Length: 202
Image (cartoon, rainbow, N blue to C red; front, side, top):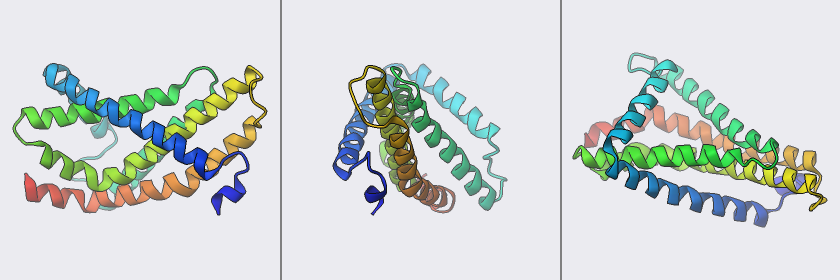
């Protein structure tokens, strides 16, 4: 079992950290949706900025699917890994910023679908199939980052005797064991399944 190789982590600790982070993510998605409904221009601008970033990554309709999948996978791995490694800076829970940014955008985009009359059903069809895996990986990565940050902070304040670098290594092992496979599945679904599902509802 993975936890036998991670002496500073336990299943219960990881479940608690993941659950708390997932709950915060859900609340922030709802806040993003509410903000998008109240400030539609802001939501639209956020969408345009996101679309520009996607285009810069080369994710256009004329890109071969294999290349698109590889780009999605690499980009999501990078984002999730950074979300975790932000935790190396004590006292500043930067992983929470990554979590909040993604959650608020997700909610704002849902508001755009609702306002334009497309409906939340179509939005969920376009997000949930791959999002179940991708968002789980992101939430886990942010939870690990917050745990690392808290451990570092407590070590500096001499409030914990948990070995900091041992915990970092254990978190990296968990990331490789769970987040990476989840992101691979997400990239496969987003490339080959999600477009077909969207064609059925749009």
